[in-house]
Image (cartoon, rainbow over all chains, first blue to last red; front, top):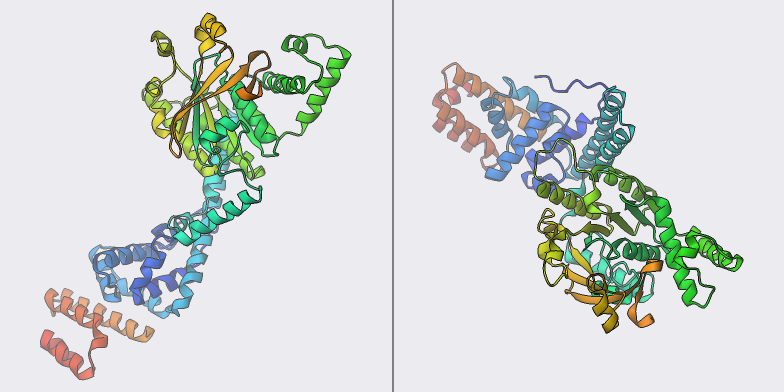
Length: 458
Length: 63
């Protein structure tokens, strides 16, 4: 039997540690429970050791007792080798103290981690040098994905079981931080009290769907929220698949100009901002620019991005900005589906949404995903969006932690809204909250400034 | 401890070869394996007696 696979580089390994672990497990079978969720057979680079470890796990699971004779017989009956004694005798010689188990396991975990990275490097090199791979950005995204996967802790499974003390300790630390004002109340505040009141802040790892028909103010609302978050020096990453960076920049500036106008400064209207400003207006606008320059908002404004490409960019951004607080994606229907899929659009969209929810979990950050509702909303009398309006979009309601709809009465019934004084009022409908209640709050939308304000501040 | 395990393995290996030579039945072989796995439960005389019960021929062979 050829024990060690032939690879292109010197394989990082420690055969002595492998022997020590097997020797200890055969002598102390109950110790299998300590290593079973940390070590997989693949952690043993010597194929005979790997097979012996598999046999140990199998015998222990079936019988709870392990011996050299049992393993000997399994090696023989499974025709793994004609000379089982030759494989097992070195293990009897390597038996050491039980206290050596954990350090030896650590060595194997480390070696496996190094091998994974080395293997990823090999794969990346082959991919990069392959003349068929012409799309550099695609290659970069794939390379990043491979390296990220390789560098993930392979011991992560050990963190799955947490005792209550550990959990409560974390809760208590957060409680103290909130008391001292260091941490936002529970989740990420977007500084709209009515929204924060409903959500108690957007939670890390949550996927929040913000859906509406066109022109309801989806982009404006998330830009307002993003700016509010960034003003507390919390980095925000914004994927804009529709508007380019300048359009977004202008919207952010306009929104802030409204705040200055409300503060009593010289008004600068949207039209004036887009055309020509007086000297006084220019000074106000310049002041707004100076205030916004330092905001940690990063924009990716490339059209036709796939989920894989966004994931790669988000991972890179997170590694450079560990305190990333919010990701915004504008919007779902413009995400490019993966190539070569024969599945229906509904399934593809559902899969993309699920992947984005997984990304929120992986990066430990809330993701707000904007989504456009189809025309079916408008074919009924009550045009307020409902959960069933999402059904055609890949059952995204299943994967979302929070679903918010926007509805503007004045969009559909302008005369009625004028008569009732509800012009500009936007209903923020919380149709689903996994960790909170459902309900509706209202904000006022100042369309010409793309600015949402709390109704009571008007 | 390591010496005992090595000795057991060599003994099992020898027994297995005897099975292939037709000198020992498979039933006897597995009983011997079981006996070796519970070796710590027997003193020297008990072990010999148990081995004799399983296979008189093998017991005579090793004295």
